[in-house]
Length: 256
Length: 305
Image 1: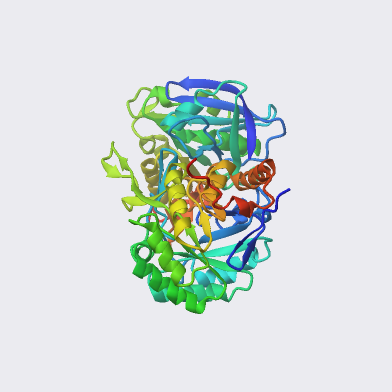
Image 2: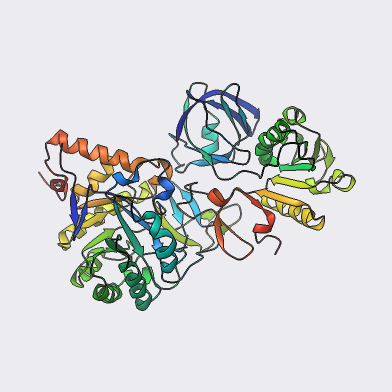
Protein backbone atom coordinates (compact mmCIF):
# COMPACT_ATOMS: atom_id res chain seq x y z
CA UNK A 1 0.00 0.00 0.00
CA UNK A 2 1.52 3.29 -1.09
CA UNK A 3 0.58 6.95 -1.04
CA UNK A 4 1.49 8.24 -4.46
CA UNK A 5 1.55 11.83 -5.60
CA UNK A 6 -0.21 13.02 -8.73
CA UNK A 7 2.42 14.52 -11.00
CA UNK A 8 0.16 15.11 -13.98
CA UNK A 9 -3.48 14.63 -14.85
CA UNK A 10 -4.03 14.79 -18.59
CA UNK A 11 -7.55 14.79 -19.99
CA UNK A 12 -6.86 12.83 -23.17
CA UNK A 13 -10.44 12.98 -24.28
CA UNK A 14 -13.79 13.93 -22.80
CA UNK A 15 -14.14 10.49 -21.20
CA UNK A 16 -10.53 9.56 -20.43
CA UNK A 17 -7.82 10.90 -18.21
CA UNK A 18 -4.23 9.83 -17.80
CA UNK A 19 -2.92 10.05 -14.25
CA UNK A 20 0.83 10.08 -13.85
CA UNK A 21 1.69 9.14 -10.28
CA UNK A 22 5.01 9.16 -8.53
CA UNK A 23 6.34 8.11 -5.15
CA UNK A 24 8.99 9.39 -2.81
CA UNK A 25 10.74 6.06 -3.12
CA UNK A 26 11.47 3.85 -6.09
CA UNK A 27 8.21 2.29 -7.28
CA UNK A 28 8.10 -1.50 -6.89
CA UNK A 29 8.59 -3.92 -9.77
CA UNK A 30 5.46 -4.07 -11.91
CA UNK A 31 4.76 -6.51 -14.71
CA UNK A 32 2.56 -5.79 -17.74
CA UNK A 33 -1.01 -6.95 -17.12
CA UNK A 34 -0.86 -6.35 -13.39
CA UNK A 35 -3.22 -3.81 -11.84
CA UNK A 36 -3.58 -1.46 -8.90
CA UNK A 37 -6.47 -0.78 -6.52
CA UNK A 38 -7.01 2.95 -6.23
CA UNK A 39 -8.71 4.48 -3.25
CA UNK A 40 -11.27 7.16 -4.01
CA UNK A 41 -11.64 9.55 -1.12
CA UNK A 42 -14.29 12.13 -0.37
CA UNK A 43 -16.85 10.79 -2.75
CA UNK A 44 -20.32 10.42 -1.31
CA UNK A 45 -21.44 7.37 -3.22
CA UNK A 46 -18.29 5.40 -3.85
CA UNK A 47 -16.92 3.10 -1.25
CA UNK A 48 -14.69 0.42 -2.71
CA UNK A 49 -11.32 0.91 -4.34
CA UNK A 50 -11.22 1.07 -8.15
CA UNK A 51 -9.19 -1.60 -9.94
CA UNK A 52 -7.16 0.07 -12.70
CA UNK A 53 -4.71 -1.63 -15.02
CA UNK A 54 -1.13 -0.45 -15.25
CA UNK A 55 -0.90 1.63 -18.42
CA UNK A 56 2.81 2.33 -18.28
CA UNK A 57 5.74 2.46 -15.88
CA UNK A 58 8.28 5.13 -16.58
CA UNK A 59 11.32 3.98 -14.63
CA UNK A 60 13.45 6.98 -15.50
CA UNK A 61 10.97 9.41 -13.97
CA UNK A 62 9.68 6.93 -11.35
CA UNK A 63 6.16 7.25 -12.72
CA UNK A 64 3.15 4.95 -12.77
CA UNK A 65 0.59 5.78 -15.45
CA UNK A 66 -3.08 4.96 -15.06
CA UNK A 67 -5.40 5.45 -18.00
CA UNK A 68 -8.86 5.96 -16.56
CA UNK A 69 -12.15 5.86 -18.40
CA UNK A 70 -14.74 8.03 -16.72
CA UNK A 71 -17.58 5.57 -16.26
CA UNK A 72 -19.01 6.33 -12.86
CA UNK A 73 -18.74 8.48 -9.79
CA UNK A 74 -15.45 6.96 -8.62
CA UNK A 75 -13.57 7.42 -11.86
CA UNK A 76 -15.06 10.90 -12.31
CA UNK A 77 -13.78 11.80 -8.87
CA UNK A 78 -10.31 10.47 -9.73
CA UNK A 79 -10.37 12.56 -12.90
CA UNK A 80 -10.56 15.72 -10.77
CA UNK A 81 -7.17 14.97 -9.16
CA UNK A 82 -4.66 17.78 -9.33
CA UNK A 83 -0.88 17.73 -9.34
CA UNK A 84 0.31 17.35 -5.77
CA UNK A 85 -2.74 15.37 -4.64
CA UNK A 86 -2.03 12.11 -2.84
CA UNK A 87 -3.72 8.92 -4.02
CA UNK A 88 -3.55 5.72 -2.00
CA UNK A 89 -2.98 2.58 -4.09
CA UNK A 90 -2.48 -1.12 -3.48
CA UNK A 91 0.07 -2.41 -5.97
CA UNK A 92 1.11 -4.34 -7.87
CA UNK A 93 -1.76 -6.85 -7.88
CA UNK A 94 -2.47 -9.99 -9.87
CA UNK A 95 -0.44 -11.83 -12.45
CA UNK A 96 0.60 -10.25 -15.68
CA UNK A 97 0.88 -11.51 -19.25
CA UNK A 98 3.32 -14.36 -19.80
CA UNK A 99 6.56 -12.75 -20.92
CA UNK A 100 8.60 -14.54 -23.57
CA UNK A 101 12.35 -15.03 -23.36
CA UNK A 102 14.45 -12.25 -24.83
CA UNK A 103 14.84 -12.30 -28.63
CA UNK A 104 11.83 -14.63 -29.03
CA UNK A 105 10.99 -14.37 -32.73
CA UNK A 106 7.34 -15.37 -32.43
CA UNK A 107 4.97 -12.72 -33.74
CA UNK A 108 2.98 -11.10 -30.94
CA UNK A 109 -0.31 -9.36 -31.69
CA UNK A 110 -1.72 -7.23 -28.89
CA UNK A 111 -5.44 -6.62 -29.41
CA UNK A 112 -7.17 -3.95 -27.34
CA UNK A 113 -10.65 -2.47 -27.31
CA UNK A 114 -11.60 0.86 -25.74
CA UNK A 115 -9.89 1.47 -22.41
CA UNK A 116 -8.72 -2.16 -22.63
CA UNK A 117 -5.85 -0.86 -24.74
CA UNK A 118 -4.32 0.59 -21.55
CA UNK A 119 -2.24 -2.38 -20.31
CA UNK A 120 -1.08 -3.19 -23.84
CA UNK A 121 1.08 -0.08 -23.98
CA UNK A 122 3.22 -1.25 -21.07
CA UNK A 123 3.18 -4.81 -22.43
CA UNK A 124 4.36 -3.55 -25.83
CA UNK A 125 7.12 -1.50 -24.22
CA UNK A 126 8.32 -4.45 -22.14
CA UNK A 127 8.28 -6.77 -25.17
CA UNK A 128 10.23 -4.30 -27.29
CA UNK A 129 12.73 -3.87 -24.43
CA UNK A 130 13.62 -7.57 -24.63
CA UNK A 131 13.83 -7.47 -28.42
CA UNK A 132 10.48 -9.11 -29.10
CA UNK A 133 8.52 -7.34 -31.83
CA UNK A 134 4.91 -6.56 -30.86
CA UNK A 135 2.19 -5.42 -33.26
CA UNK A 136 -0.99 -3.76 -32.09
CA UNK A 137 -4.58 -4.04 -33.24
CA UNK A 138 -6.63 -1.41 -31.43
CA UNK A 139 -10.34 -0.80 -31.73
CA UNK A 140 -12.84 1.65 -30.37
CA UNK A 141 -16.23 3.13 -31.08
CA UNK A 142 -14.88 6.27 -32.64
CA UNK A 143 -11.65 8.13 -33.39
CA UNK A 144 -11.70 10.06 -30.12
CA UNK A 145 -11.78 6.86 -28.08
CA UNK A 146 -8.46 5.66 -29.51
CA UNK A 147 -5.79 6.96 -27.22
CA UNK A 148 -2.01 7.06 -27.07
CA UNK A 149 -1.62 5.93 -30.69
CA UNK A 150 1.68 7.79 -31.06
CA UNK A 151 3.06 6.01 -28.02
CA UNK A 152 1.98 2.61 -29.33
CA UNK A 153 3.72 3.35 -32.64
CA UNK A 154 7.06 3.69 -30.80
CA UNK A 155 6.92 -0.02 -30.03
CA UNK A 156 5.47 -1.60 -33.18
CA UNK A 157 3.03 -1.45 -36.07
CA UNK A 158 -0.43 -0.26 -35.14
CA UNK A 159 -3.64 -1.37 -36.88
CA UNK A 160 -6.85 0.41 -36.05
CA UNK A 161 -10.58 -0.19 -36.32
CA UNK A 162 -13.46 2.06 -35.33
CA UNK A 163 -17.11 1.10 -35.27
CA UNK A 164 -18.09 4.30 -37.07
CA UNK A 165 -15.17 4.21 -39.51
CA UNK A 166 -13.80 7.56 -38.31
CA UNK A 167 -10.28 6.09 -38.11
CA UNK A 168 -8.70 2.97 -39.60
CA UNK A 169 -10.91 0.19 -40.89
CA UNK A 170 -14.60 0.31 -40.11
CA UNK A 171 -15.89 -2.47 -37.86
CA UNK A 172 -14.68 -4.52 -34.93
CA UNK A 173 -11.08 -5.53 -34.30
CA UNK A 174 -11.86 -9.05 -35.43
CA UNK A 175 -12.96 -7.67 -38.83
CA UNK A 176 -9.55 -6.08 -39.54
CA UNK A 177 -7.86 -7.24 -42.74
CA UNK A 178 -4.51 -7.75 -41.00
CA UNK A 179 -5.92 -10.87 -39.38
CA UNK A 180 -6.41 -12.38 -42.84
CA UNK A 181 -3.19 -11.08 -44.34
CA UNK A 182 -0.64 -11.78 -41.63
CA UNK A 183 0.21 -14.70 -39.43
CA UNK A 184 0.65 -14.35 -35.68
CA UNK A 185 1.92 -16.78 -33.06
CA UNK A 186 0.67 -15.20 -29.84
CA UNK A 187 -2.29 -12.96 -29.05
CA UNK A 188 -2.65 -10.90 -25.89
CA UNK A 189 -5.98 -9.14 -25.54
CA UNK A 190 -7.80 -6.80 -23.22
CA UNK A 191 -11.15 -5.11 -23.72
CA UNK A 192 -14.88 -5.69 -23.41
CA UNK A 193 -15.72 -9.34 -22.86
CA UNK A 194 -17.65 -9.80 -26.16
CA UNK A 195 -14.62 -8.47 -28.04
CA UNK A 196 -12.22 -10.76 -26.19
CA UNK A 197 -14.55 -13.68 -26.79
CA UNK A 198 -14.47 -13.14 -30.56
CA UNK A 199 -10.71 -12.67 -30.42
CA UNK A 200 -10.46 -15.94 -28.48
CA UNK A 201 -12.61 -17.71 -31.09
CA UNK A 202 -10.42 -16.36 -33.87
CA UNK A 203 -7.28 -17.47 -32.04
CA UNK A 204 -8.74 -20.93 -31.40
CA UNK A 205 -9.73 -21.34 -35.06
CA UNK A 206 -6.22 -20.36 -36.16
CA UNK A 207 -4.59 -22.32 -33.34
CA UNK A 208 -2.87 -19.23 -32.02
CA UNK A 209 -2.01 -19.08 -28.30
CA UNK A 210 -4.16 -16.44 -26.60
CA UNK A 211 -4.10 -14.65 -23.27
CA UNK A 212 -7.03 -12.52 -22.11
CA UNK A 213 -7.06 -9.87 -19.39
CA UNK A 214 -10.32 -9.65 -17.45
CA UNK A 215 -11.86 -6.84 -15.47
CA UNK A 216 -14.56 -8.51 -13.41
CA UNK A 217 -16.43 -6.57 -10.76
CA UNK A 218 -14.11 -6.65 -7.80
CA UNK A 219 -14.06 -5.67 -4.13
CA UNK A 220 -10.81 -6.49 -2.31
CA UNK A 221 -8.36 -7.15 -5.15
CA UNK A 222 -6.28 -9.52 -3.02
CA UNK A 223 -8.19 -12.81 -3.08
CA UNK A 224 -10.07 -12.38 0.18
CA UNK A 225 -13.67 -11.62 -0.79
CA UNK A 226 -14.14 -14.06 -3.71
CA UNK A 227 -16.40 -11.62 -5.57
CA UNK A 228 -14.57 -11.32 -8.91
CA UNK A 229 -14.70 -14.98 -9.89
CA UNK A 230 -14.50 -16.48 -13.36
CA UNK A 231 -15.36 -20.06 -14.35
CA UNK A 232 -12.53 -22.32 -15.37
CA UNK A 233 -12.66 -25.00 -18.06
CA UNK A 234 -13.17 -27.65 -15.36
CA UNK A 235 -16.05 -25.69 -13.82
CA UNK A 236 -14.34 -24.16 -10.81
CA UNK A 237 -14.46 -20.56 -9.70
CA UNK A 238 -11.15 -18.71 -9.58
CA UNK A 239 -10.46 -15.13 -8.52
CA UNK A 240 -9.67 -12.73 -11.33
CA UNK A 241 -7.68 -10.58 -8.89
CA UNK A 242 -5.21 -13.23 -7.74
CA UNK A 243 -5.44 -16.05 -10.30
CA UNK A 244 -5.66 -13.48 -13.13
CA UNK A 245 -6.41 -10.89 -14.31
CA UNK A 246 -4.58 -12.47 -17.25
CA UNK A 247 -5.60 -15.99 -18.19
CA UNK A 248 -4.64 -18.33 -20.97
CA UNK A 249 -7.93 -18.80 -22.80
CA UNK A 250 -7.59 -22.57 -22.40
CA UNK A 251 -7.89 -22.20 -18.62
CA UNK A 252 -11.35 -20.64 -18.90
CA UNK A 253 -14.77 -21.99 -19.76
CA UNK A 254 -15.34 -19.46 -22.57
CA UNK A 255 -14.78 -21.75 -25.52
CA UNK A 256 -16.05 -24.95 -23.90
CA UNK B 1 -1.37 1.59 29.10
CA UNK B 2 -4.69 -0.19 29.50
CA UNK B 3 -5.03 -3.95 29.33
CA UNK B 4 -6.65 -4.80 26.03
CA UNK B 5 -7.27 -8.47 26.83
CA UNK B 6 -10.81 -9.78 26.64
CA UNK B 7 -12.30 -13.20 27.24
CA UNK B 8 -14.95 -14.79 25.05
CA UNK B 9 -15.95 -18.05 26.74
CA UNK B 10 -12.64 -19.77 27.44
CA UNK B 11 -11.01 -17.89 24.63
CA UNK B 12 -8.51 -15.20 25.55
CA UNK B 13 -8.07 -12.45 22.97
CA UNK B 14 -5.02 -10.19 23.27
CA UNK B 15 -7.29 -7.36 22.21
CA UNK B 16 -10.93 -7.05 21.18
CA UNK B 17 -10.22 -6.56 17.47
CA UNK B 18 -10.85 -9.48 15.17
CA UNK B 19 -11.54 -9.73 11.44
CA UNK B 20 -14.83 -10.95 10.02
CA UNK B 21 -15.29 -14.14 8.07
CA UNK B 22 -15.27 -13.74 4.31
CA UNK B 23 -13.40 -10.44 4.40
CA UNK B 24 -9.96 -11.54 5.48
CA UNK B 25 -9.43 -14.82 3.62
CA UNK B 26 -7.29 -17.07 5.80
CA UNK B 27 -5.24 -14.17 7.10
CA UNK B 28 -2.41 -15.05 4.74
CA UNK B 29 -3.82 -12.73 2.07
CA UNK B 30 -3.12 -9.76 4.36
CA UNK B 31 0.41 -10.68 5.46
CA UNK B 32 1.93 -8.40 2.83
CA UNK B 33 0.19 -5.44 4.40
CA UNK B 34 0.44 -5.97 8.14
CA UNK B 35 1.51 -8.12 11.09
CA UNK B 36 -1.66 -10.19 11.41
CA UNK B 37 -0.50 -11.67 14.72
CA UNK B 38 -1.32 -8.33 16.36
CA UNK B 39 -5.03 -9.11 15.96
CA UNK B 40 -7.15 -10.49 18.75
CA UNK B 41 -8.35 -13.12 16.32
CA UNK B 42 -9.06 -13.93 12.71
CA UNK B 43 -12.34 -15.54 11.71
CA UNK B 44 -11.46 -17.35 8.51
CA UNK B 45 -13.64 -17.92 5.48
CA UNK B 46 -16.92 -19.82 5.88
CA UNK B 47 -16.25 -23.55 5.69
CA UNK B 48 -18.65 -26.36 4.86
CA UNK B 49 -18.20 -30.10 4.99
CA UNK B 50 -18.42 -30.45 1.20
CA UNK B 51 -16.62 -28.12 -1.23
CA UNK B 52 -18.83 -25.37 -2.64
CA UNK B 53 -18.33 -23.39 -5.84
CA UNK B 54 -20.55 -20.58 -4.61
CA UNK B 55 -22.95 -18.53 -6.71
CA UNK B 56 -22.46 -17.50 -10.34
CA UNK B 57 -20.81 -14.18 -11.21
CA UNK B 58 -21.72 -11.33 -10.70
CA UNK B 59 -21.59 -11.60 -6.96
CA UNK B 60 -20.97 -8.05 -5.88
CA UNK B 61 -22.58 -4.65 -6.20
CA UNK B 62 -21.26 -1.46 -4.70
CA UNK B 63 -23.92 0.54 -2.88
CA UNK B 64 -23.83 3.87 -1.04
CA UNK B 65 -21.39 3.42 1.87
CA UNK B 66 -21.37 -0.32 1.42
CA UNK B 67 -21.67 -3.30 -0.85
CA UNK B 68 -23.86 -6.27 -1.57
CA UNK B 69 -22.32 -9.68 -1.92
CA UNK B 70 -23.67 -13.02 -2.98
CA UNK B 71 -20.56 -15.18 -2.81
CA UNK B 72 -22.52 -18.13 -1.48
CA UNK B 73 -19.93 -19.76 0.79
CA UNK B 74 -17.43 -20.69 -1.89
CA UNK B 75 -14.86 -22.87 -0.15
CA UNK B 76 -12.95 -26.07 -0.74
CA UNK B 77 -14.51 -28.00 2.12
CA UNK B 78 -13.49 -28.87 5.67
CA UNK B 79 -11.19 -31.76 4.70
CA UNK B 80 -9.26 -29.55 2.27
CA UNK B 81 -9.05 -26.86 4.93
CA UNK B 82 -7.69 -29.34 7.47
CA UNK B 83 -5.17 -30.80 5.08
CA UNK B 84 -3.97 -27.85 3.02
CA UNK B 85 -4.82 -24.58 4.74
CA UNK B 86 -4.61 -25.37 8.46
CA UNK B 87 -0.90 -26.31 8.29
CA UNK B 88 -0.13 -22.87 6.90
CA UNK B 89 -2.08 -20.90 9.49
CA UNK B 90 -1.85 -22.97 12.67
CA UNK B 91 1.29 -21.26 13.91
CA UNK B 92 0.07 -17.70 13.40
CA UNK B 93 0.21 -16.16 16.86
CA UNK B 94 -3.45 -15.18 17.19
CA UNK B 95 -6.75 -16.97 17.58
CA UNK B 96 -7.59 -18.60 14.26
CA UNK B 97 -11.34 -19.16 14.39
CA UNK B 98 -13.20 -21.07 11.70
CA UNK B 99 -16.61 -19.96 10.50
CA UNK B 100 -18.64 -23.16 10.13
CA UNK B 101 -21.66 -23.46 7.89
CA UNK B 102 -23.93 -26.21 6.69
CA UNK B 103 -27.02 -27.10 4.71
CA UNK B 104 -28.54 -29.35 7.38
CA UNK B 105 -28.05 -30.00 11.09
CA UNK B 106 -26.00 -33.07 10.21
CA UNK B 107 -23.59 -31.17 7.95
CA UNK B 108 -23.09 -28.43 10.57
CA UNK B 109 -22.23 -31.14 13.11
CA UNK B 110 -19.90 -32.97 10.75
CA UNK B 111 -18.07 -29.78 9.84
CA UNK B 112 -17.74 -28.76 13.52
CA UNK B 113 -16.32 -32.20 14.32
CA UNK B 114 -13.75 -31.94 11.54
CA UNK B 115 -12.62 -28.54 12.80
CA UNK B 116 -12.68 -29.71 16.42
CA UNK B 117 -9.93 -32.19 15.57
CA UNK B 118 -7.59 -29.30 14.70
CA UNK B 119 -5.65 -28.53 17.84
CA UNK B 120 -4.79 -24.91 17.07
CA UNK B 121 -8.32 -23.82 16.21
CA UNK B 122 -9.62 -22.74 19.63
CA UNK B 123 -13.13 -21.74 18.56
CA UNK B 124 -15.68 -21.88 15.81
CA UNK B 125 -18.18 -19.31 14.68
CA UNK B 126 -21.38 -21.06 13.71
CA UNK B 127 -22.84 -19.34 10.69
CA UNK B 128 -26.62 -19.60 10.89
CA UNK B 129 -27.04 -16.34 9.04
CA UNK B 130 -25.61 -16.52 5.52
CA UNK B 131 -28.27 -14.98 3.24
CA UNK B 132 -26.71 -16.30 0.05
CA UNK B 133 -27.27 -20.04 0.09
CA UNK B 134 -30.41 -21.89 -0.91
CA UNK B 135 -30.32 -24.48 1.83
CA UNK B 136 -29.32 -24.04 5.45
CA UNK B 137 -27.45 -20.84 6.24
CA UNK B 138 -29.89 -18.15 7.19
CA UNK B 139 -32.80 -20.59 7.21
CA UNK B 140 -31.60 -21.79 10.62
CA UNK B 141 -30.94 -18.34 11.93
CA UNK B 142 -34.32 -16.75 11.41
CA UNK B 143 -36.37 -18.86 13.78
CA UNK B 144 -35.72 -19.58 17.44
CA UNK B 145 -36.42 -23.27 16.97
CA UNK B 146 -34.08 -23.55 13.96
CA UNK B 147 -31.28 -21.67 15.71
CA UNK B 148 -31.75 -23.71 18.89
CA UNK B 149 -31.75 -26.99 17.00
CA UNK B 150 -28.46 -26.45 15.20
CA UNK B 151 -26.69 -24.97 18.24
CA UNK B 152 -27.90 -27.85 20.44
CA UNK B 153 -26.58 -30.43 17.98
CA UNK B 154 -23.20 -28.72 17.52
CA UNK B 155 -22.81 -28.04 21.25
CA UNK B 156 -23.08 -31.80 21.90
CA UNK B 157 -20.00 -32.54 19.80
CA UNK B 158 -18.00 -29.34 20.15
CA UNK B 159 -16.35 -28.58 23.49
CA UNK B 160 -14.26 -25.51 22.64
CA UNK B 161 -15.54 -21.96 22.41
CA UNK B 162 -18.71 -21.81 20.35
CA UNK B 163 -19.67 -18.45 18.88
CA UNK B 164 -22.96 -18.18 16.97
CA UNK B 165 -23.23 -15.57 14.22
CA UNK B 166 -26.69 -14.05 14.12
CA UNK B 167 -28.74 -12.78 11.23
CA UNK B 168 -30.26 -9.29 11.36
CA UNK B 169 -33.00 -10.41 8.97
CA UNK B 170 -35.40 -11.24 11.78
CA UNK B 171 -38.22 -9.54 13.64
CA UNK B 172 -36.50 -9.68 17.02
CA UNK B 173 -32.83 -10.62 17.16
CA UNK B 174 -32.86 -10.75 20.97
CA UNK B 175 -35.12 -13.79 20.87
CA UNK B 176 -32.70 -15.66 18.63
CA UNK B 177 -29.81 -14.65 20.89
CA UNK B 178 -31.69 -15.96 23.93
CA UNK B 179 -32.44 -19.22 22.13
CA UNK B 180 -28.80 -19.90 21.27
CA UNK B 181 -27.66 -18.87 24.75
CA UNK B 182 -30.08 -21.39 26.22
CA UNK B 183 -28.51 -24.12 24.10
CA UNK B 184 -25.03 -23.40 25.40
CA UNK B 185 -23.49 -20.95 22.94
CA UNK B 186 -20.49 -19.22 24.54
CA UNK B 187 -20.99 -15.99 22.62
CA UNK B 188 -22.89 -14.42 19.77
CA UNK B 189 -21.42 -12.40 16.94
CA UNK B 190 -23.73 -9.92 15.31
CA UNK B 191 -24.67 -8.88 12.74
CA UNK B 192 -24.23 -10.86 9.57
CA UNK B 193 -25.21 -9.07 6.36
CA UNK B 194 -28.65 -7.60 5.78
CA UNK B 195 -30.61 -8.95 2.86
CA UNK B 196 -30.59 -6.37 0.10
CA UNK B 197 -30.88 -5.87 -3.64
CA UNK B 198 -29.62 -3.60 -6.40
CA UNK B 199 -30.92 -3.04 -9.93
CA UNK B 200 -29.12 -2.02 -13.11
CA UNK B 201 -31.63 0.45 -14.52
CA UNK B 202 -30.09 0.50 -18.02
CA UNK B 203 -30.37 -3.25 -18.40
CA UNK B 204 -33.50 -3.49 -16.26
CA UNK B 205 -31.90 -6.45 -14.51
CA UNK B 206 -30.71 -7.20 -11.01
CA UNK B 207 -26.95 -6.63 -10.60
CA UNK B 208 -26.40 -9.85 -8.64
CA UNK B 209 -26.82 -13.23 -10.30
CA UNK B 210 -28.85 -14.27 -7.27
CA UNK B 211 -31.04 -11.11 -7.41
CA UNK B 212 -30.64 -10.53 -3.65
CA UNK B 213 -27.49 -10.46 -1.56
CA UNK B 214 -25.99 -9.45 1.76
CA UNK B 215 -25.46 -5.77 2.52
CA UNK B 216 -22.39 -4.77 4.51
CA UNK B 217 -20.26 -1.72 5.15
CA UNK B 218 -20.73 1.54 7.04
CA UNK B 219 -24.35 1.82 5.85
CA UNK B 220 -25.43 -1.02 8.18
CA UNK B 221 -23.62 0.24 11.28
CA UNK B 222 -26.46 2.04 13.04
CA UNK B 223 -28.68 -1.02 12.70
CA UNK B 224 -25.92 -3.25 14.03
CA UNK B 225 -25.19 -1.00 17.01
CA UNK B 226 -28.89 -0.92 17.87
CA UNK B 227 -29.13 -4.70 17.71
CA UNK B 228 -26.02 -5.16 19.87
CA UNK B 229 -27.46 -2.78 22.43
CA UNK B 230 -30.81 -4.55 22.54
CA UNK B 231 -29.19 -7.98 22.71
CA UNK B 232 -26.81 -6.95 25.48
CA UNK B 233 -29.87 -6.38 27.64
CA UNK B 234 -31.28 -9.79 26.76
CA UNK B 235 -28.37 -12.21 27.21
CA UNK B 236 -25.49 -12.77 29.62
CA UNK B 237 -23.03 -14.29 27.15
CA UNK B 238 -20.54 -11.96 25.48
CA UNK B 239 -21.38 -10.25 22.22
CA UNK B 240 -18.90 -9.78 19.41
CA UNK B 241 -20.14 -6.75 17.51
CA UNK B 242 -19.76 -6.18 13.80
CA UNK B 243 -21.38 -4.31 10.96
CA UNK B 244 -19.72 -1.44 9.17
CA UNK B 245 -16.82 -0.76 11.53
CA UNK B 246 -14.31 1.41 9.69
CA UNK B 247 -12.34 3.11 12.49
CA UNK B 248 -11.68 2.98 16.23
CA UNK B 249 -14.59 5.25 17.03
CA UNK B 250 -16.97 2.75 15.44
CA UNK B 251 -15.37 -0.07 17.43
CA UNK B 252 -15.74 1.84 20.71
CA UNK B 253 -19.34 2.63 19.79
CA UNK B 254 -20.10 -1.09 19.54
CA UNK B 255 -18.36 -1.79 22.84
CA UNK B 256 -20.18 0.97 24.69
CA UNK B 257 -23.42 -0.43 23.32
CA UNK B 258 -22.59 -3.80 24.86
CA UNK B 259 -20.06 -5.67 22.73
CA UNK B 260 -17.10 -7.37 24.43
CA UNK B 261 -15.13 -7.60 21.20
CA UNK B 262 -15.60 -6.54 17.61
CA UNK B 263 -15.00 -7.76 14.09
CA UNK B 264 -13.91 -5.67 11.16
CA UNK B 265 -15.29 -6.83 7.85
CA UNK B 266 -15.87 -4.95 4.64
CA UNK B 267 -13.52 -2.10 5.52
CA UNK B 268 -10.57 -4.47 5.21
CA UNK B 269 -11.15 -4.12 1.46
CA UNK B 270 -10.74 -0.36 1.58
CA UNK B 271 -7.84 -0.25 4.04
CA UNK B 272 -6.14 -3.61 4.58
CA UNK B 273 -4.45 -2.22 7.69
CA UNK B 274 -7.56 -0.72 9.30
CA UNK B 275 -7.67 -3.37 12.05
CA UNK B 276 -4.30 -2.30 13.42
CA UNK B 277 -5.37 1.33 13.42
CA UNK B 278 -8.48 0.31 15.38
CA UNK B 279 -6.37 -1.51 18.00
CA UNK B 280 -4.18 1.55 18.46
CA UNK B 281 -7.18 3.86 18.58
CA UNK B 282 -8.96 1.80 21.26
CA UNK B 283 -5.78 1.73 23.30
CA UNK B 284 -5.39 5.51 23.16
CA UNK B 285 -9.06 5.99 23.98
CA UNK B 286 -8.72 3.85 27.11
CA UNK B 287 -5.66 5.81 28.18
CA UNK B 288 -7.33 9.12 27.52
CA UNK B 289 -10.26 8.30 29.79
CA UNK B 290 -8.28 6.31 32.34
CA UNK B 291 -9.81 2.92 31.68
CA UNK B 292 -7.45 0.30 33.11
CA UNK B 293 -9.00 -2.46 31.03
CA UNK B 294 -10.80 -2.40 27.73
CA UNK B 295 -13.44 -4.63 29.33
CA UNK B 296 -14.65 -1.55 31.20
CA UNK B 297 -15.97 -0.18 27.90
CA UNK B 298 -18.44 -3.01 27.41
CA UNK B 299 -21.92 -1.66 28.07
CA UNK B 300 -20.55 1.58 29.53
CA UNK B 301 -23.15 3.53 27.59
CA UNK B 302 -24.86 6.16 29.69
CA UNK B 303 -28.50 6.39 28.66
CA UNK B 304 -30.58 9.33 29.84
CA UNK B 305 -29.43 12.32 31.86
